[in-house]
Length: 587
Image (cartoon, rainbow, N blue to C red):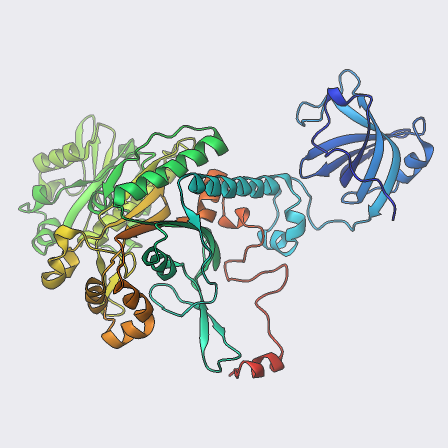
């Protein structure tokens, strides 16, 4: 089929092009037949241009234009003209001009699409994922992927300017399950043996530090076989970074520089550096989360000292057991009805604690069912400690340290949502630092690494590894944006003795460590430099910066929440011959 190649895109024409002959190609967005004249909006990823066909211009093209329907692929040759007065469309960049259609070629016809190719459609997501190639024609989807493209370019340019080397690491690697579940790949030429898809290039980037590449980065695909949610996919992209002869501040400074670039070049927003820092303990005791959203208040207060000797045994006995009594003031909460409070008590109980106590502070004084046990004076002191003002309501929870603060953290977010306290136009970036090295897994009955098993303890806490491991803090740090963790990293262990010690505390014996990580432990014996790094969740950052509701909206071909690709029907069964070649037999 003969047709002229385009001379311009559908978002390019301006009054300066008036009088010029041009050729456009693209998809028919809409068609309007006004009797003697046919108007079409022609669309490509650059924009929309209105094309006019009429018998007074070219009869053959006008007749053919009567056949056009939405999503037909066409080529149009014509002349650019000024739109008549009163018909200018300020909503599109080409809205001051028309193209008079002189030649028309229908390159491909199209069936009626299952949903409209337009923004803000109310369409089931599964349908959009099944016809992803149609969904990606929509302007808002294309803008997100172009935004993501710019993120790639900024990333590579920034790290190159700071003397980092981009090095690819293997996609087929050794299975070292520690954390999420590995995706396994059977080896045909090594029957009974398997590769794993990398959860991250962690061991490889540490090996690169041993090899002398003191500044490494990579935009890399990673894979985790875990349950999914709105901001998680089985395959995802991260910006992977590692540096030698540095400390935490060096890495954090590099990270802050990249975030400044993202905000400035993508959103034209200046962010202030350095970002605020909270210790893990401060974050949990202040906001009930290791990724707190500080765009609103509702900061917690500890009431344990105030109630430890009170007549309210629910609180006093709890404190004697080593538990915590804490809470926060809800602005305007004194006006909550009995029904609203019953609903909140049930919500709190659903989180696994005994219930929710509350003290309303009114213009007349205290209004609370627990006042008769605590006394008016203690109730007033609790309100004062929480920073409550008349008209506020102080919510109180008591349980173990972890349970109390995590429950309050969930309740805090729920109240912010119900009271619409979050400023959606605000960007809040902060570091959370000084995480515990270990947390105890009741399920596995052993310590597990809070970050990963290659994280170094803080030098002043190394002695706790021998005496009281839960007290040891890690040289780990997370970057948080609006209550979402967007990057996490640590200073690494760089000698075999310390690494073996940590493995031992994690229940990884000498033989298991040698089998899983022997290559890295061997490398450390040949002069490993002090090093550390970080990994950014690229997809999550793109989701947040584009105000997308789901991480799937910033990935070209995502999976559903069950890890399924509706468009190309995978995962799918494979031929028995393929399984036989891999020495695999299905149950």
